[in-house]
Each structure stands twice: as C-alpha cells, then as structure tokens.
Image (tube, rainbow, N blue to C red; front, side):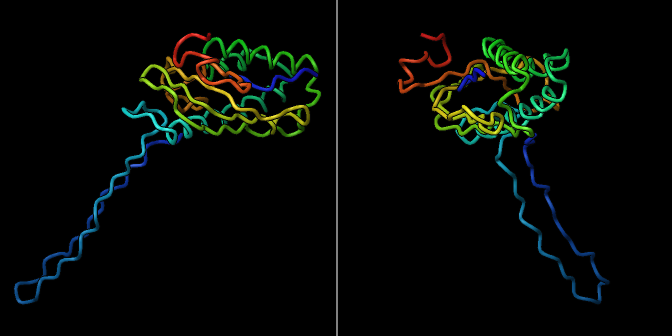
Length: 204
C-alpha cells in the first residue's frame, strides 16, 4: 500500500459573575453583609473566533478540534467502506484547496487498497504546533508535526512540516467548530520555511 507521510468546540469560557449579599435585618439587629466573590473573566479566545493576536496556544486548540473531527470523519469513511456524498461534504468543512484535493486522493487510495494497513479502530491524528511563522486574519502559517500514526498500522513516520489555515467560509458547525480550514499541508524534508513556501503565499 502506498502511504503518504504528510498532508496538508472549545467555546470561550466566560466565568459567571457571582455575588452574594445578605438581607437587611430589623433596625434593632446588627446588619451583616456577606463578602462579594471576586469577578473573574477568562481571556481565552474560542476557536470559533479570530483573535487580534494569533498564538501557538490558539492554533493548537484549533488543530485539536480539527484533528478530532478528522478522526470522526475517517472512522465513518471506514465504516462506509469508501467515499460518500456525506464524506465529501464533511471534508469540505475541514479543508480548502489544494489540501482538499490531496486528502480526497489519499482517502481514495486507502479505499482502493481496501483499507489494508489501516488500524481496526483508527484514532484521531495528533498535531503539535511548533511555531507561528506568519499570521493575519486571513491566513495562518505554522511549523508543526502532524502524526497520523493512529490511523496506519505500519509504514508511517512522523516528520516536521508546515500547515496553512484559511478562514472557513461558513458559520461554525458540529463538524468544524473552528473559524478555520486547512488549505495546505507541506512536508519540511529538512528544508527551511523559505525553501518550502512563502508564508501565507504561494508555494515556491
């Protein structure tokens, strides 16, 4: 079987403001006021939002959500023994071109090989975001390691690479709870980012 080595809702938690106050007692009794709990607000930006500052931590949470959805998609794909209309729609929520076409090709090869070399119970891919190379509200480009070893039973090695994300064109959904889709997934193969790709631009 030919196996390709690389391819390219956390909702914002806002703590409730809580306060406790005692009722006033009769004039003849002392008045006791219970302490007010401090107000706390989380600064974590949800993956369904595009923050002003795009950090490794934010992109990591985005990729965790996309990887979880990818795993669910692939397990359904395997149960269906190949592509379906629903599978194409699911992929379109996770990927933009050219990564969409590359992933369709990969899945087609896997189905054509009758899932030979695929684990009986595939798990989710695991992405480690290493560095944000370039980021704007319209594009994120990071160095990463994306591990598909939980899908393939053999013949797979993890290698460094680069991921490009672009904004998803529609509102978030169960299948993609983030504001982003993967548009490119590139194997580094020992090259620097300048030798591989123009961040948030065209491949060189």
